[in-house]
Picture: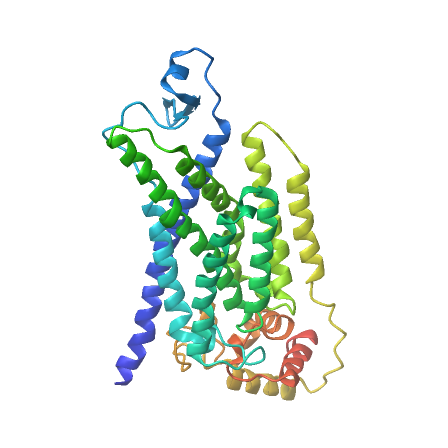
Length: 405
């Protein structure tokens, strides 16, 4: 039974690795296709009036060279005169990205909710309650977004964008008051990802199918389906940079461990939107440097605002052996259950980030990491599972600041 109990978290670790790899691969394919088609749509130029292309119903074309070959993509105003025999659908990239992402969310967070989602200093939730909050946010996010799209507001791009951005910020605020900062961030990202894939599943692909069906029946497709699909595709394009940051945010505790983590996320997401807007305009031949400048300014403002306070000079610690003995005792009690060659903390098959703190040499070797994660950011222990006190954090800080002897 003991061997079996050990193999479960080890197996989950491998499952996490494989699903995460799949998620990154399919995410690259999906976002790459999104970037390409927005670039293509903004870069095509209308054919000359009266030309053969114009008579065929082509609204724009582009010549490009890549990989030693010349390409000539064309876009039709509504549809070609005849339905082509082979028609490629861009959908599985989106579906597989979401499915692998939700699987990863389940493996990394839902299977170990007490460690990964619950922060008792924020809200004392059970695992099921935390999971319920997480999944509920995904459903609520898509429902509200879709209703906004279908409302009169959906016809006004700028106002709609501001309202949706406000929706994401409010969601971040609410989630950071129920879940740990790390889990709150990842669920805002999962909410955005759910909106993006639901756009593909519920609007873009069904609209394209209706257009193809109309042509197969010998009729003319209703252009409204293409217009709706285009609107949702543009929304997805602006979501990409914020969601990409959130995908990597778990590596940066300085953001999600801040007292106003929701506001930090809001500024970073806004920076991503401004930078994306710059590229979308540039594809159309309009270079507006103010947009990336605003994005960079927002990131700099966040970096300055959340910078850790300059440490106060540590008091003299003449008895360094006794001081280190206290440090080692704190680490043994609060950290080693995870940071060990064979972790005893449920849900962990290996030490996080490969950091082992079982002896004096290992503690001294990782002194700066201990100081940063446990004292400055208070990101460790994860969700403070082992109840490290502020006094213990201060003891670790005094040891490091006096030279980590």
